[in-house]
Image 1: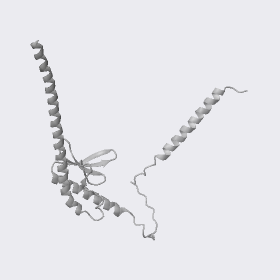
Image 2: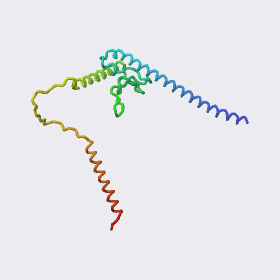
Image 3: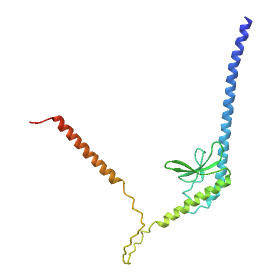
Image 4: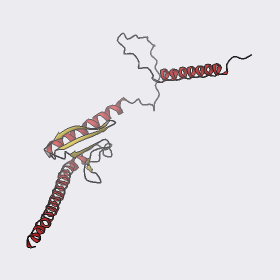
Amino acid sequence: MSDEATNVVPIVSRASRLADALRRARAREQSRLREAMAAQEGRLDALADELRAMADELPSGEADRFALMPSDNGERLVVDALSYVDLQPETMDYRLVLQRRDGPDVIVEKTDREAMADSVADYIADRIVEREGLVDRTPDTSTPTLDTSTPTLSVESDAAPQPRSRFWPGFWLFVLGGVCSATALFTYAWLQAGPTG
């Protein structure tokens, strides 16, 4: 009888050892995740502090276009409406990401905070220059001007052909499909009706 009692005890203790080991492993994983999140927030906050001085240097009309502040959940640093800085999960490298129609596109990836701050400054400068170019190209419609020069006819030999609209070919294919369908339906009905008379 005493042999049976000693055999039961190790099985119970083995099960509790596994449960204890699982509990310890889960606690270690939660601790690691908390430390990683704290490190991520700290790195993004440090970059945000470095970029705050640059926000004061923005031209007067551009200050409202660039946020340069952490998002609500703290996972990224918002640069403007289309771009943000986040951290690569495995390496904790800074990534400047541009949101496009087909998904996010990583523009720059840097390990050093100062190098990323320089990259963000370059990105902002490019956007400002791009916007200035668009503003300069818009015609001023406030004062109408009369063209008093004589009209000339110029023919460009290397002129690129104008892109054609894709609407009209699709429209005519739709109309053709409708006519063919109506003809087929009329023919089917006429054949099913049989000879008259």
